[in-house]
Length: 144
Image (cartoon, rainbow, N blue to C red; front, top):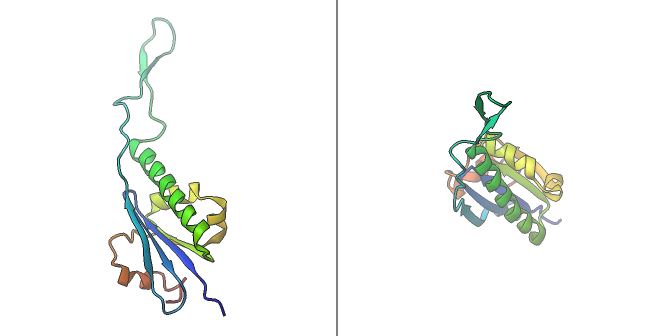
């Protein structure tokens, strides 16, 4: 019987780790670890508008904060790397772990092939957990 291969992504707003499980008894192998290279800084204020001639000028509210924009940009980068690993690796399923805001950004931008393969997602920041301790967080999904 062929073992089920699982691609595991754990991420937060600043870092991400890509790991693989090649079946029972194999544990987790780290494929890559990367962090956010730069943060994009935007203008101090979003600008002003004038309603009518002679009327007061009012500032515009930003549509999204810089933190949200940076989170979404990093999520796109992480998903691009993950999608490439998925295409090359011959994995059977995909598991994701991230804190709530990053998990939402990753779900929103997830490519269709990864979304179809998503077996489980954990609402936890696991970046600080040692590789040897990670399996106990995924034991409900992956047989180690």
